[in-house]
Length: 260
Image 1 (cartoon, rainbow, N blue to C red):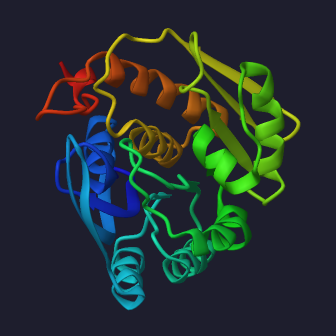
Image 2: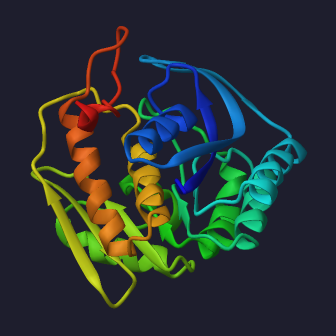
């Protein structure tokens, strides 16, 4: 059977991030992607023009519809804009016998807020403890923990701060630092430093969603967390290198680059 992976995230009408990026990633990596829509955004290459959250009961119904009939081998979470949605989704994934990859989305690529400030504590106390792997970027680390990463040497301290909230593993994404794109994967005792050359390409919309979905896809295929994150990093690096212009602003990474 083809493994099924469920994304619980917002819709990006421009197709570069959110559920659309997740499903493209899953297809490229050979798993069956399924979706729970948490919010609808009006979004393009220039930014987010509007966002509308779905009711918690609609999110819960979508999730139960998929999990109770089809089942899942991994779950990935993305945009959860309110404390109510965070608690709802945390409860659902905690009751699901499958690894969960939590991308604690705070802002869009263009700096548009996608998480209410009042929901931050819910992410810390409810969502992160349910995560097999959490995948914050540096802005999200600062938002959640107060730790600001200025150099590669700060990544370990940032990872330790996130792990205090209970995820089994954390990937601190150092893509905003100068030099090579370096990420730190750790569970508090085991460390994996993942490096890739930095590509001179501004079209990187959807990078975070793509990485988290790639990790979930590899976990669904039976890989260990270090194996899954390493393979996901390689896939995302290729997608960034092949990112393309779309519209007047920042274009998306190329999710189908590995398919030829």
